[in-house]
Length: 307
Ligand code: 13P
Ligand code: SF4
Image: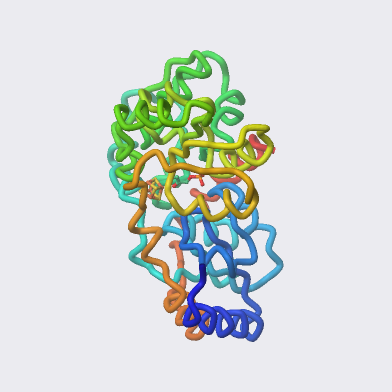
């Protein structure tokens, strides 16, 4: 439910958006009032494509830093804004360029597959990017006997290794938000709601993914729930997705797998910050050209393989 103050802020933002000829792209984990006013709401892959294909010169990305950076890498020449430059992804920041270079030195023939949840410098030393919505397609495009280093999410990496029956070297990071789902609690919910299907993000711990009926990206979860004949679902991803799930499926019931499925960085973007960002055309997201050009190669390769 949007408050009267948020209603006024929304009107202001819509006016500014028109005035500045800006396009607002939001992730499913954003606050509902931010999702409600966005021109486009999607998962990290769809956000990247929406930015790339947008005819607007100003793009405001309501999401964490790697999402805004991806838009800036794919759209040189456009103004890419973030309403909160401190909104980051703790998992993305765990790996360093030296970690990747050290691996490459030891395994010069291996292919570095880089989850889009990484800073631009990491993409720049990787061979190909992926998101959870296209990772299976990307890895299937790599030569069958190629060595693979999947960075940085160990759980998405191990999910892919298991699903594709391939050996994949993993980095050891994981998402602190998805880590909040406890197996015992999920088992109790399954008992309490025996007809509910369990839909989770592959960033969850493998023992959680093993209990799920479906694992996929945020958009994958939304599509699965929307197309399913089922009426109730236990959701194992960040709580912001409940807004889009409920909006698309008013007659279905969604139960969060944990009350702590909150990404504080995603939630640090507010309507006040979106308004300020559009009004001042700040904070602009830029990537040094040398890094941008190399990171763009890994992102464009992802788009080519995913298409
Ligand atoms: P999606 O690509 O599914 O949107 O996931 C991004 C993310 O950060 C999940 O925690
Ligand atoms: Fe990063 Fe996890 Fe937040 Fe996604 S939910 S942005 S992986 S910290």
